Amino acid sequence: MISTAVQHHTTRYSDCGLFMGIFMLGLIENTQKCNLRTVAAAKVYKHLVEECNTYLKGDSCGCKVPVDFTSCDSLIALARSMITSKPACMLNSRETQHISSLITQVFLYSIPCNSCCFGRTVTIGIEGQAVSNSSVFPGLLVDVPQMLEPADLNRLGSGPFKVVLFNVSLSGDISEVGDVILEIHKGVDPEHDLLQQLLKLGEQVVKDKVRLFACQKVVHPILQHYLRKHGVVVIERLGLALMEPFVQITGAQAVASLCSSVPAEAYGMVKEFCFQSCGSRELLQLLPSKDAAVSTMVLCHRNETMLEELKMTCQRAEHVLRLTLREPYALLGGGCTETLLATHITHMNESKAAATAAALCVSQSEFLMAVKAFCSSLQSVALSLEHDGQDCLIDLTFAHRWFSDTYCKTCGCGLVGDRSNLEKTPLNTSYHTFSPVSLESTDRQPRILDSFSAKLNALNVAIEMANFVLDVKYIIKDIN
Image (cartoon, rainbow, N blue to C red; front, side, top):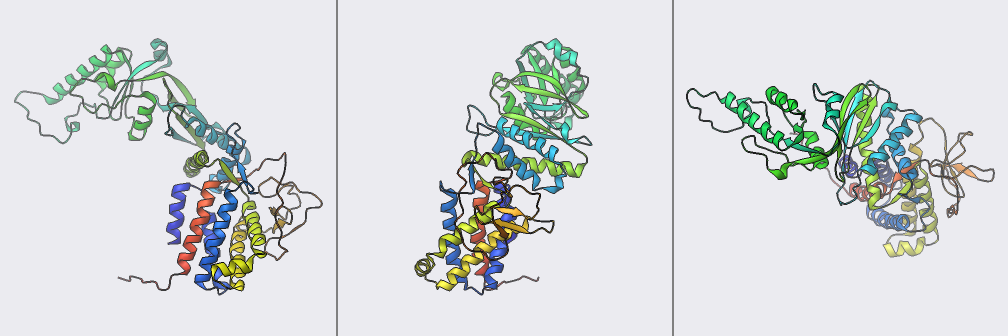
């Protein structure tokens, strides 16, 4: 159940799955350690998560920063945080910054000017090339058709150019006609007649001044030769994955029959097309004639495994950036949100423990134990971010997370700078409760950010699932 809940969350939000898992398991473990009654724990946890929601959504929240769409800094920081959390991508700091900028670029390209629907990002992977060769291109990149030379494009002149798109095979093979019954008369060559029909189709598109002829599947060599002779660029084997972005960028309607003429409304347009060299590959770039929010991200990496991990991470990072359009905020990363939120909840509930416990119909001791279990579980997430054996610290002013490394000059998120009068203590030890001080003004920008929408949902689902698991009395196992 826990695994399924985490998977559902990451499918929907692409981030904070690890936070959700660690926090949820910490809650279950701490509740059992304290011997808390399940009913009492559930009531208190539900109350505390409502306080967290109110605090995180409020204007006075100290761990929330607005995402400024007039500047790319916060968007790049959010993308960079996603990449650095995936060590399997095997990127150094310069490569991480480069890829973060590209993710932000494709996100901005995907926002249309005159539509409520997102555009598309097509990703092309090139193995064996340096990550620094990765780049983003507006429009759609496809493999260069055979025998197409730069001189052929120059002869076409300036655009826009008319486009036709087919989603059926134009190979001329009778077996590709489909699941139909054919009645063939004696002396008739069906493949010859089919080729004549293809050439008739070619004559029509040439007459209609088509300059780009694209097909999802195979195009007969004789039809290709005829079209090229009349100055038409032919793209075959486009593939199912590129059909939708091709339609978006051209406005063409895919033609599903070769036995009837192409209707006028099926034609589309491209502004222009040109050659682009990407690493070791030569690609043809198609630029839209209208506002089509389609771009192509070319990702390069040293081997196939790293490349696949990088492609998946970039897709998830772009999704996280899209979530900011719905809620234009981000939370401080590096464990600082967890320590600050835990400190705020502890301080806020210490003075009103008796009244809140009475309202929830639990004892005061149960309430305080549940608050401690809740906040310890939050802090366990911050502790889990340290992998090098260093102690995790919390400062007793701003409640941000710190490393014990003496060379570290900023907190985990990078927003608070170190100073001589900033008292710190190990995170997993007891210390006096306090109200975190808000940063009134600072020239620093957070270095690490987390998705606001993803973490808020993860927090709520973790509480819901922890309460559910703690309430399970019996497990029925089918051994058949």
